[in-house]
Image 1 (cartoon, rainbow, N blue to C red):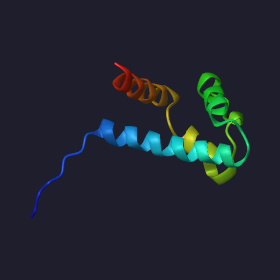
Image 2 (tube, rainbow, N blue to C red):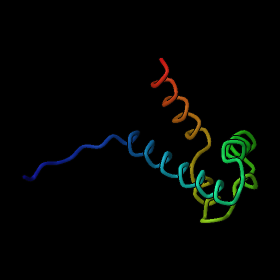
Image 3 (cartoon, helix red, strand yellow):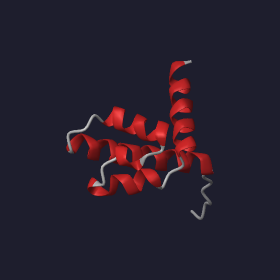
Length: 82
């Protein structure tokens, strides 16, 4: 059973973005913030002040490229709605 597994880099990157966003969302929610508003504020402005540092949420989201986050979110939305 020595099979080589092939993984697409896009699939791995997409999963990393989704996992990170879920963790950031939960951290914001736990701290009493509106996660959607806070994440949108960060994505639009690039200001990490929108994201709490609780549970390293700020570090998690700023380690990702904002354009890639938006691209993954839009592709996922379009796939589910077209």
